[in-house]
Image 1 (cartoon, helix red, strand yellow):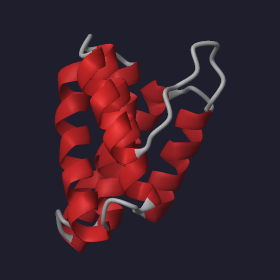
Image 2 (image 1 turned 120 degrees about the vertical axis):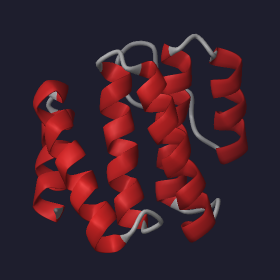
Image 3 (image 1 turned 90 degrees about the vertical axis):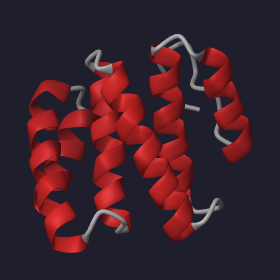
Length: 123
């Protein structure tokens, strides 16, 4: 499960979302059974899958998974945890992709997440 998630994250970092998505789906299924739905690692995988879905055009799926990951991370780790902020950033990108920019901006403000750069860089 961890190896699958790590490989999928590497593929996402390289921009290969098509290969990363099935690995994340499999890792999420395994983690859900082994760790439970509320476990932070399960929701880390859920957030990473949401990121990939948003990039590949499944905005509704990305919003659903991103919102679930954010709620679970906030409940288990708290608002100030980096994984919670990362989940908020992923959900905000999905909201942006769906044209819900004001909702995305409100989410970024709530969690102290920076607006993504428009030139392709991070920050």
